[in-house]
Image (cartoon, rainbow, N blue to C red; front, side, top):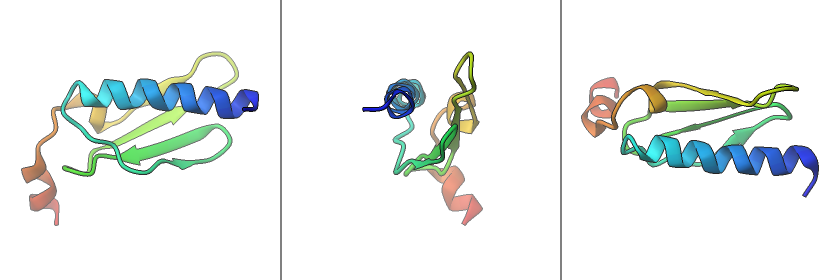
Length: 76
């Protein structure tokens, strides 16, 4: 694995674990060189990861709230 690919994979594992603590099940990742995002397959909450030069970051609804499949139904 290249350095960037390895960093992506590590951050994805951390993100999946972190979102899972709130009940989210992240689907397929959409990745760019320094950015990635995935959404919960149950409620649609998104999680974004960033790979800046110094410190990786994560943000999004999948880290801020518990998974609620009914919220996806209301949004549909």
